[in-house]
Image (cartoon, rainbow, N blue to C red; front, side, top):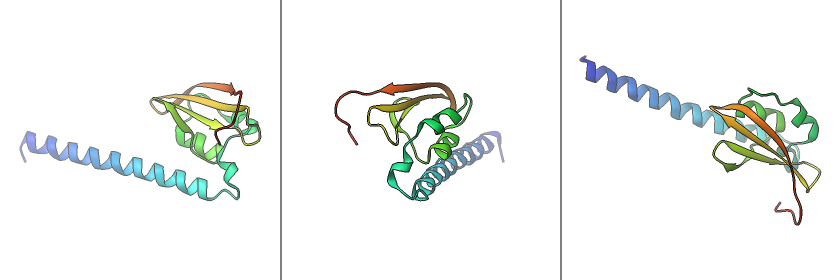
Length: 112
């Protein structure tokens, strides 16, 4: 196998690995959300928010909260509070590591 052939093979393997990783992550998120007894458990509560640490991966946060966050911008996700309609949790990730956490106060009508 020549150098170009080897590089093409290596590229195909890398793409396959990435596709499988993303697919496995989505499957795990769905499995986590379906394991909740109640639908509101996919949101976050204050106790779960306090468990979060900088450097955690997105999937680690999903495991703690019991559900996926809603993408609000590139690498920024938001979880509604389980109990309060006036509060949410906004988390920013960089290269799949938690780098910033913020409690968001909401006013007006809930969009749930």
